[in-house]
Image (tube, rainbow, N blue to C red; front, top):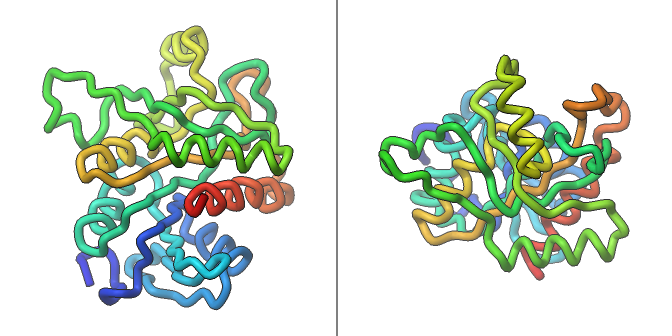
Length: 234
């Protein structure tokens, strides 16, 4: 057990999917895993372990924002031996050709700051996805016929952004979408020599104002989870 995860040693698989919402973790575990069992409920941040096609998998909520994700990812890697961590979550589209329900595979994650900023100091470290996971996810998405985009995303510190000028520059420089966790996950993966990827479903669009209706979210998010699981064991 750790401060924030109540699982016993052996309860956490080496492959971990990390949605921000603990109830999305519950939904994904019950939908995609065989024999899922609750292994963590400390602070309501639910985690489940089961199997997918015979492979052990843990689906652990990370909370919202990079500081929260950093806590869970650090403990999963350092105390439970997680080797592959895949963020599954929603994002806002930032390019005209990126549509609602599309999937984004984050090759890189730009950001203003992360919890790792104190380590890097003056260095602008460029965190990126694991190539083997990225390639496998792109192939899995293509096989499913899911409209997918591969490229850079922006991990924001804030949800209620009041920097339209920054969003304009992100769009100008080809950033596909915005979310709040991936950059720190990629930093931690690099630091601890593990694999990481963010597989994101576009749930709303910053340019068009479109948003995915709540009743459609689970169906659309299912593609994202399936792609992540397929990539993890390719």
